[in-house]
Length: 498
Image (tube, rainbow, N blue to C red; front, side, top):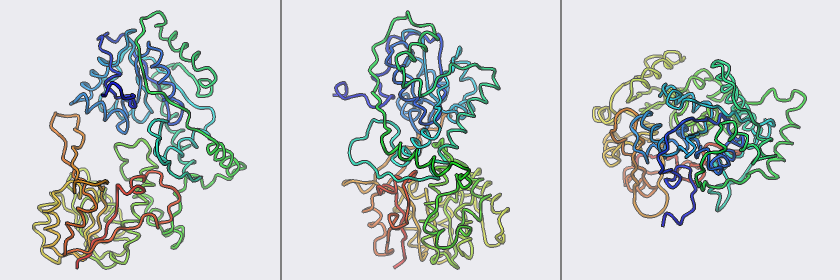
């Protein structure tokens, strides 16, 4: 049955080569988001001479799928498997990478370029940066990065000037990263542009084939997934509008955080993000994201749902914060008026980051108690009614929920604010998955339990009254970076003791 289904992912095992040809040379398509690199790589694959290049170093794309399929326990093992399965009969192996993914993987595996040697860099960029930024902003809103998988209802698109501006900055950073790398390492890449590729696709691919010297090699039969152009009249409208709004020096506010209802009510300088800019900028970027500004957009929305919507509950409260993201959530609770916070961090790295941020804050030391311990041990040692509000993010999916709720019932907090993934669809009350393995060692990852809404209601029982924060009522201009909250697969609940 699998053989009859169309190939939709570059991680599909049907794209593996079985002839076992050793690699004689490799190439890296050095790119930035929305530069036409995916379309270009599919054309390279269709040539039958250049392997099947894709984003094998991107943890948010192909890396996870390949790593799980190969059961790779180290970067070296992972790359060796890729080379053995994706090297063409011509002896060529190829991959595509945005600079941040390339740089990050190289830090984990410094021998990468030696293993791929000799390496040719093919640098693709886009002359029209505004068009590239608009394309990226649109993909961020829809969470659709290629023409595949676009069946069904399409998400609503809204023009967002700040999102486009941030996308342009991200593109410029990615391109600058590659150019600086080439200069520092005395590399002269093979250059091409998106516009030239569209003008002559076949000719561009032939130039690459000849540059690598494999025009007379034996070809593979490759059926890579097709890619269609995603841009339409909406793209052109946004491009023209953005240019109108930013010409003549009118871009002084580009890159500013998007406005929201909470900040509008209290004034532009009174939002936590603006008043604690140093803290916000020092927060670590998510491992699976190559787009730092998107992490901050997502965090801002989550702040508005978890803290902004619940200020009255936090005012004067004794708060227990389970995993605080370098102190962010605890400082936000204190800023909202909490009397004190007990912070539980499970890793030394997060503990140290939280302590540093607390020491640099304006809050009195006695208002915050920072613990490095297992959450279950802390809960068992606490006395009933010692805490008024529990902040629970991330941990909810990593604990045994019946035991956790049992402890909550014993401790009797007035409120529990939960931000969690939610299993959609009918059937099981909880869905289980295994988190991706770390590179070091071959031990299985942690089991993640994603409860359904019905499971949360059942666990609340007669002890807690629940309500869900209405994300749709938060005046969100667009849902870039928070599509999981838009479709209900991630929700924020407030549980109140009966």
